[in-house]
Amino acid sequence: MRRAFFAIAVVPFLFASSALAGDAEIKAGQSVIDGQLKALIANDGATAYSFAAPNVKRIFPTVDAFMNMVTNGYPPVRKPQTYSFGKVEETAPGSIVQQVLIVGPDGKDYEAVYTLQQQPDGTFQITGCSLRASNSLST
Image (cartoon, rainbow, N blue to C red):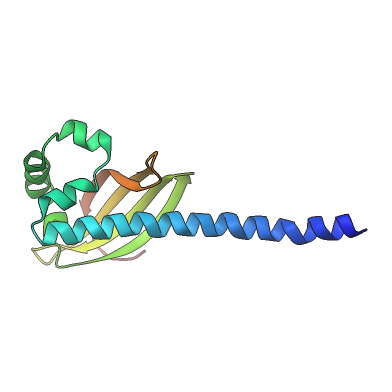
C-alpha cells in the first residue's frame, strides 16, 4: 500500500520537473536571442557573432562576414526599434523555435523566427533566423 502511494506521489513530480526543464531551456534560448539583439543594436559584432552556432559560423567564418549578412539581409534584426518574444516551441530536447515580434527601423512590423540548438557545453546558440513582414503582432 505504501508503494502505491509513493508511485502516485512521484509521478506528478516527474511531470512537473520535465515542464520546468523545458521552461529553463526556453528562458535560456530567449536570453541568447536578447543578448544577440542587444549586441547588434550596440554595434558589437563580436558579441553578436558569439551567439551564432557552428553551422552559421561555417557559412560566415568572420565577424565582418556575419555582420554584413545581418546588415544587408536582416535590417529589422540589425536595428530593431522594439522587439518582444512571441510563440515558442521546444521541438525536441535541446531544440527551440522562438518567434520574435519586431518593429523595424522603418517602423513596420516584422516576425523573426529563430532556431536554437543546445551545444555540447550546455549553452544554446542560434542556428538560423527567418524574417518576414508581419501584418499584425498577434501571438
